[in-house]
Image (cartoon, rainbow, N blue to C red; front, side, top):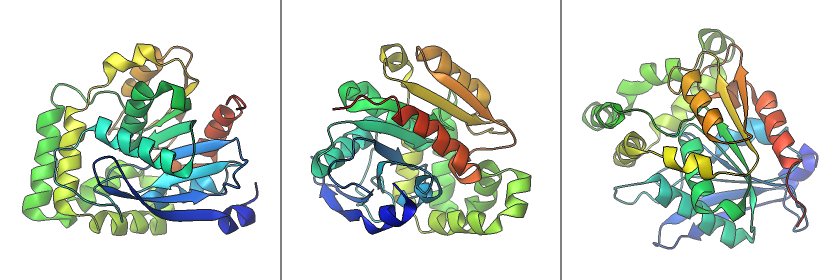
Length: 278
C-alpha cells in the first residue's frame, strides 16, 4: 500500500471505552479487506503522531490512538494501570472491527503492548517491543514518583532538558532538531496531572510473570545508547519470550521509531509477514 493511498484512505474519531473514557484514534489505510494490520502504541507524553515516520514505510493498515491521559483522549483521574490502557486498545479494536493485529509499542507503549498480549493473546498476532521493559526495577516506584512530583510542582518545562537527552543521542539532536522540537511541543501540551498518573503507573508496572506465557512471534528492539530502558532490560525480554528476536540499533538512544523509522518499520514488516491469514 503506497503512502498516497494510505493518506487518502483513513478514518478517525473517538471511541468510548468500557469505563466511559473517550479515546481518540486514527486508522490509516484500511479498506476493509486488508489482512495486514498493526496497532502502534506511543511512548509516554507523546501522541498518535509519534508513529507517522514509521507508518510511511509500512505496507499495512495501521491503527494508532492517543492513550488515555494523552493527546485528544480523555484525561480521567487515576490511578492508571497498564492493564487499563490495554483494555482501551481492545475497545478501540472492537470499534474498528479488528479481531487481531500486530500489537507494537515504544517505551510506555511497549509496556501496554505487553499487557495487551498477556490479556488478549488470541488478538495479538505478533508483538513488537521497542525501547521498553517488563519491569523498571525495585527502585522504580520511588523514581517515577519523584518525576511525577517534579512535573506537578515545577511544571513540565522543568523536565525538557532531562527528557531530550534521554530521548535522543547527541548526534541526532544536532542533525534533526526539528524532530526534537516536535517532541518537546507535544510533551509540553500534556495535562500535568495525567502525566504524573502515567509516571506512577510505569513505576508500578511489573509484567515479568507474563513473559513465559507469550507464544506469538515477537521482536525486541532497543537503542545501543538507551539508558531509560537499557540493553540489559531488552535482553531480559528476549530471554523471557520464547522465540523472540533481539535487535540492538547502533547509535540510537530511547525513541528509536523517530531516530531510525525505516529500521523499525522493517522489523514490523517481518512480523506482519508472519501473521496468519484469517
